[in-house]
Length: 164
Image 1: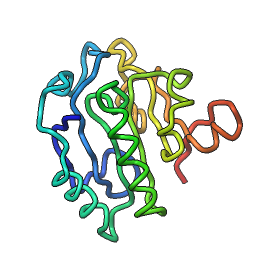
Image 2 (image 1 turned 120 degrees about the vertical axis):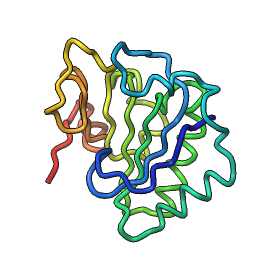
Image 3 (image 1 turned 30 degrees about the vertical axis):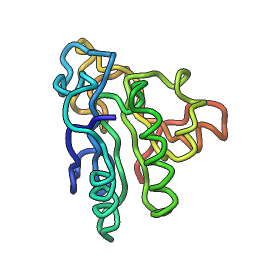
Image 4 (image 1 turned 135 degrees about the vertical axis):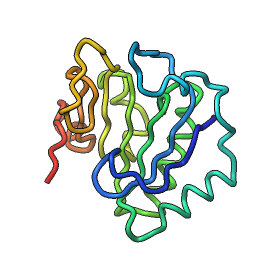
């Protein structure tokens, strides 16, 4: 898996101060995408041991609320295995920190993936330029959904995330 960067202190990719792993690779290629440079799986650099150590060192800081996966698409076929491993390790090392993930896939296509065992919130759906609405919290277009993963899996129905 390749990644573009590790953002060590983001305040716009989920609640609190978060570490963001920006991955490379996305087959959705949404018109109007804010990150078209992340579409190609070979963009950026290889996610290796040193990148993983940097990521977990950042997450260890007490003021960090959690980890966010974005990109590109973390659920792009070239990324899913590594992203799932990172999410599992993050929940093991930092059980009180939340994990958020942005994907262009819809809930029915992803709800049974192994990674759902480790996610707290997933933002689903492609960016649709004709539905662009930057007043939405954590979404770029009205078709996207911010889903509470654990509640949705328990209810076997989509439960939208509500900030406290």
